[in-house]
Image 1 (cartoon, rainbow, N blue to C red):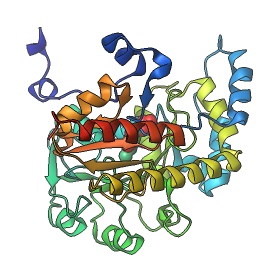
Image 2 (image 1 turned 180 degrees about the horizontal axis):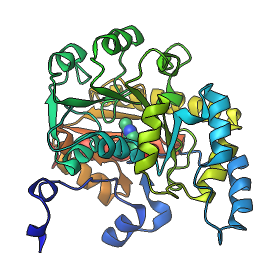
Image 3 (image 1 turned 180 degrees about the vertical axis):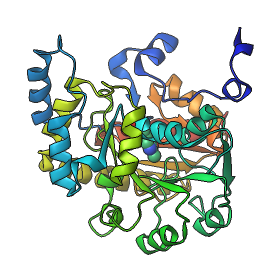
Length: 368
Ligand SMILES: Cc1ncc(COP(=O)(O)O)c(C=O)c1O
């Protein structure tokens, strides 16, 4: 039966997510509570108490369809980011925005451009449309914008840029990004994926929203899954020129963001204190992990996000040992980084447990 699907669909390698805690518990016979999951860049602080309250309230009304236009959330995002309501598209996670952009603008005749080691969803959404993905070799594990510009041709319709990038955590300096946007021809859209922007310091924070008026071909994607902690609810948004938003809105499912997610997102946006605490906890956890790696004499790629990729001898075997000990991190061989593992920043105790187990594994004779 699978031959009924086009070749380009059959060629897709499915997305590999972080291993769920319950799956590892079943596989290894471990207690769910004993497992530390640092594999999916989730917020270890959970969610804002304001969002928790909003979720309880929204639960009372779930027999009804959600507001298909996300009126209250649109109003909140519009005010917070100073963009017109018709420049916003909501998605079932920001993943949905990436996919909507691909489905709306790509045909089998088109090309997309993205970097080696960039977020795995860019090739996936490209392949699902039958378009050709052009991978540009990374420079110091980050985007080589000069090479990406040189790869643009008449068929290029979307250029994906992750800033910071997952899984390498690299950040493109603002001036470089702006210079890049100025050189991208208008027949190519730039999808600027800013899923981790809330984890950037004030000095590094993106200014791209202020560039939307200048670049009609710019789509900025943001998410509530990371610093806002709403990964399980699936809500993100894209900011773009109103004409581009109109196209994406034609493609999306009418009720792609559920009512609980909408209510939680509105409440989360209003809780700046929670985001500030999440940022501070991440800074502390990042310092804890990098110090730990230094002590273990492991090299890592300095990261601007809420995870860090480190180099370890025999990464696959180390990952297996971590799993046996109830610690879930993310192997990234599928990102052409077989010698690295990516660990998300957790609570102090979770980071400590990870470092302790890692140290024991590295000291044991059978890994080397
Ligand atoms: C760079 C990047 N973009 C987008 C996403 C998608 O997140 P979500 O669909 O939960 O908003 C992720 C999630 O890991 C990511 O790392």
